[in-house]
Length: 257
Image 1 (cartoon, rainbow, N blue to C red):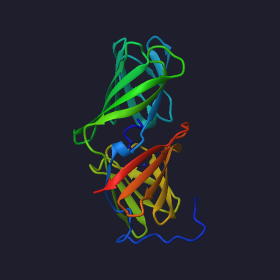
Image 2 (tube, rainbow, N blue to C red):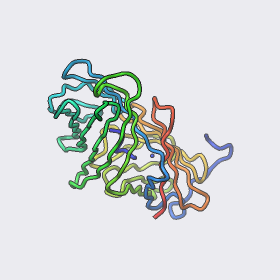
Image 3 (spheres, rainbow, N blue to C red):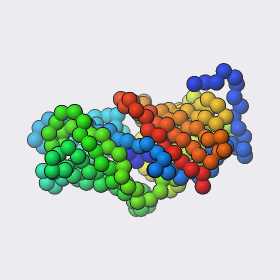
Image 4 (cartoon, rainbow, N blue to C red):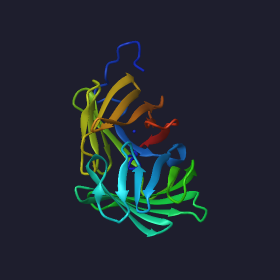
């Protein structure tokens, strides 16, 4: 679940928010995968021959492997179908709309998992990413802690940042699937859009004129923290993402368009 979401200390002096017209964060920002360090972690624990516990995000989901839609995290459904002993199909829906379709394939030695991951937008367009996961820790078959990295993306990831009222910013993907309007007062602001999760909120503050810290939660559960920093020339936006339970953060590097 967290994979589509590609996807984001107080200073000792008072900081005045930049005006909407001059805010250096405003613009269109395109992800440069070659300069980024992006990883994913998921856990699968098969407790019966046809039932597994999936930790694909902060909430565990217990799913029977019969291909039917079953209650999942944050108001979604999750379905897992066994197409072969070494091949599973994984699908997630929100309000009946297919959001994610993925094929998981194990290598012959079962130490590598290939995830052919497709996200489906509300307008029917798609984005495909292929992940390669390596087994970490004990387990057989699909049961394991899997550590993965993306190998290829079929369409660019673009972050749009726009002014919001007098002292805030609006963060959105380029296709309007998820939008978050935030003021930097530490309060929670709800996300909107066809692919936004129910109860998805962000709060933020400026720690410097070229640095923003955001905290993302879903239904009160901490999802991640993001630190956004602009380069001195204003042409590069670096986003450091820290996810609970992971020791190493992700770093996403965006370039101004």
